[in-house]
Length: 151
Ligand SMILES: [Zn+2]
Figure 1 (cartoon, rainbow, N blue to C red):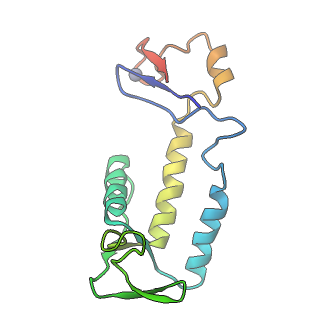
Figure 2: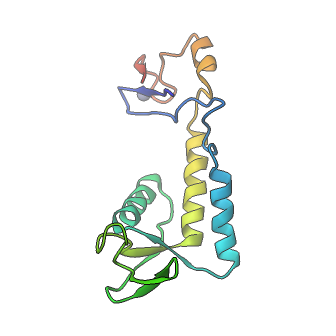
């Protein structure tokens, strides 16, 4: 995998697409399908650790997307995991350290898809062959500086 970016204006695009990578590979479509089924089944919230929920809301602000509704999980809430009652804040693998909030599933799904759309919109060269074949490949599509680099 590689991607290109501009050192002058900080523009960058997603990794070049190829057989092993696109924004929907591997297996993202079924993940989105699962989220829609949770919504169809009347579920409203999905667990996130606090850092993820905060980070997502920061990304939302940076990208001009609507924020994601979230709610804290109370210390004494309980949850059945694999048939066992555990404290919600007590991730069995890391007690007391995760799942401190839940985010609205619909907001989350919408956020993920909008982020994908922005990523797709931002692709100037879809694959590496296209970039290599472009005589203007070192010129930034945004600021026009001859400062494109490949990483
Ligand atoms: Zn630039």
